[in-house]
Length: 459
Image (cartoon, rainbow, N blue to C red; front, side, top):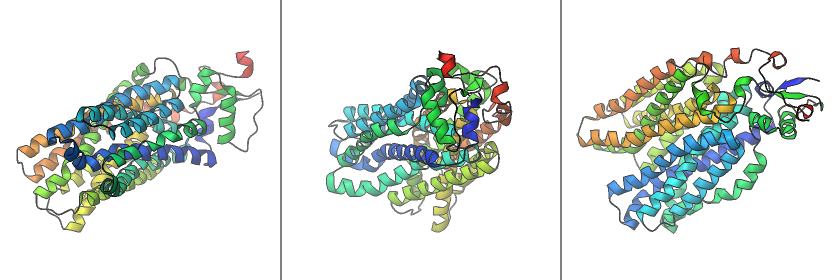
């Protein structure tokens, strides 16, 4: 008889078809998620014309999804640690697919806003869950790369909305791009069948058969005895009160630092996406169409996300992330200076890499920081708090724009949060991280505080 630390098994696994399946499903879900979030911006001019809404009312319609994302990230992230991550992901897919499609059927601004709020619950809730899913099962040596590669699907979804949106809207009307977003709900049965459940959740539920199937997938060459016992470290034990664990075992200060870093990064992301084109046009720059700008920004985001993840697997992820915040401060500030058009596009790409890309790497670091049993909760709360920065950014920058400040001052206002985020990340106590070597140094069979599960234990 032997005792198996399932997280050590996942850490030391060799990438195989099981990992590829988890990666593909999580990336596909994030692509759908990114499309649903971006589609309203693509269709907004047509919506305003068709429904007869003023710009101020249109802004509220757009922000309704952001409000939903705050609650979705917090509550559906936490719910996953109670009902299982697989079911939480499925619920999120149903929410953002059904209610984005419902928004396409709305005939007045209020119903549209309600539908977008409900869709926002799913859009916000799915992010922490798929990051937690990929983080749990990715081999340790390539974990950040796989998480950021998966999350680059968010930028793919934004580009997909930009590329498909124009043709669909011109041919079938703005409703078509929303109705198309309902198609992913058809994949929910396949998602429930294909995605594995979180291992601490299975241990708590006593599902030995599912654990053995996952163990066989992680290590296809090994044969498991009926007397083998599965275990996870005590800090990864799932219980009924995951929120309070965000502040236990010295994690409280770092939790607050993550919240500050997420707030600042999402402030930058939404400030740029809402106002950069307008600011540049007012300053006399020609960046081409909004479609080209969105593509450049998202291409930069993909390069920043995947490149940042690759670096994070080879160097300390905390310091890679801090450097990305620093690059954001520099690149956004450079946008305030008159540059040749080619360099302007390069600066926009760097801004995408160091804002959207930085947020994706921050998701990966946060997912690694918390123990598995509270991973969805920790990331959900960080994203939920961060979304308040996303809501605040368009308003704050809009006030500054109305003051007719010089371009440089407006962009410095967007760059300052990068400096604050950099400091917050540097203050995170990595020694309290679940990914720190000291948390995995003790072999499973010698730890008295672990959870044990076997057929004999249950009988």
